Length: 352
Image (cartoon, rainbow, N blue to C red; front, side):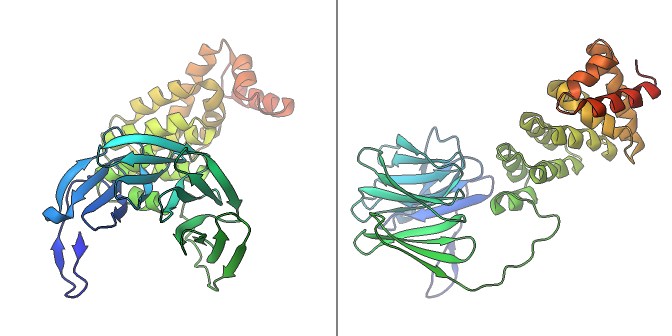
């Protein structure tokens, strides 16, 4: 979608992406618009032809948080969720190379005016300067925070960056000069149910569009904190088997005890077929991961969760060849007194 600034009316709607659009960027002559979606696609639109789709970048399998055109209008840089910067030749629609070095998602990019180097900023709090002639990392500057925007200016000698705490940084390309401007602001308190994941993914998880939700949960597997697991678990409330499959697949691939606990508690929703899916997921996670969640679930407030936990525990105890082996393996990360207490607890409930 684009707007006429003078008359401020809608002049076109570009349709193609089936999920949340994360970023867009015009080339310098304004003829081509590049858009990146949570579907992992970068689409190109010919604005000289009234927004006709001009193709997509074949083989791009990640999703881009930011896009930036080179000054020659032929090269496009994409900062990705997988911590890379991918450079594409747009004329040939071919991938050229990746720049690797960031420790978190790359969310802002800016080319130098001569197209010889590129500045990148990341959630890892680092800005990196890259030589685009050979892919060499020229310099890394670190700050306490996460960059949200950057631009190169003044004959490509300086980089200005904004971070997520409201500070503005001015850096020289050769790192000999550095300044920081604090912008006063009052942070708004986050709701208690907000999750420690990128805002784009939070929005996607809450989307009414099924494709957007599914794309989001497939992108969450690198965030292994408990808040993210809870965010994925909320999708199990939907009475839609496709969404359950995608959510549980993500939880299984995260492979943490908290993910196992969230999977177990999904049976409380009472969806037809959910219990079978949970049993399969539990088997994929295995007894070492599932032991503690299963024992905790024996005291759950929901009868359906307790019943399933008792059933799965009997299966796992038999698989491990007895209660003692099950506890020793499933609680190997705990001290001996804890293992003994769990052993005694399960034996009192009839396990042997």
